[in-house]
Length: 383
Image (tube, rainbow, N blue to C red; front, side):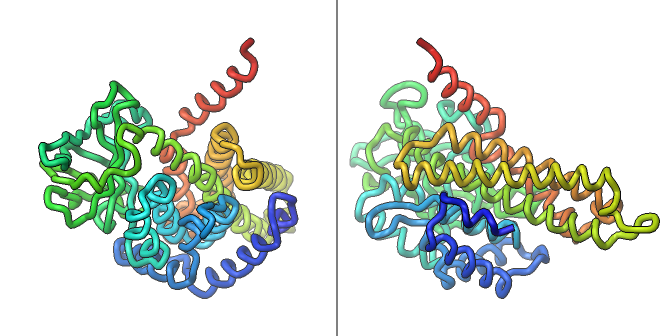
């Protein structure tokens, strides 16, 4: 299923990247879920750094980030190991706002260490009462007399929470109401006033935590870019990485299709195999269609940003929506083909069933993607 690499969205360097990463995954990754997720995630970040893969999470010497490379890496990692994909993705998302908006000093302090796997990054946006509605953020950063800021509030469902070395935190600084009054801050984990010990258990074990900030003092140098631009910074960061969520879903779906195909060909049924059954063939056809369509949408969105230099909010929303929703369907069909074995702990399709669900929620739920798509569509057709 590598024939899509021949599509005109890609250059030869992308084909080389895909081949080299595939070999690395086969040598380095396993299908087993770890007993200690935190330790496994730290190890994966270090190994991804040592392998040179995390350098794609930060801008190149010309200040560019290649979304096609990010998407290819996430698709390949997800097909092999969901936690490896998580470790890679959070390094990119957690440092993305620094890459796009940080000062030279901030970039120098964090990005090289992120690329080497020596520092773990996290993106702290979501709050208990404001998930997709970023304008409702309540965490506050109050200016102090000495030019510092005092941070108070809670964040939740923060990926890499509890193991991150630094967090990019979005807080209300009050320049204007709603979305216009937010700013971003780079917060070192060791800063007094942070409690990131409250962990969150999820269907697919990942490092997640609630963060509590209590009278945390931050220097003026912690402000990321221009004060009052936090909403735009968050949305721009998500714009870069949202396409790659679709790529991860594509990787999960491709693995499910591979597992289902092997099952259908090997499982005896009547005088033949499960693959001879017309119902099975119909399901496989639907799965192939979903995988191929997702790949087209994901890599078109990445190509538009990389090659055409266009903001791709609409195309990224289409890619994430279709790839995540259809991957859920593909994986469900695979589980059904495995029968009782499909819901048995430790079987690949069972793990995929748990892994895929969160992708339809994080970095903009499916319902939010529909709103984005509809608004772009209506804007194009209004007189």
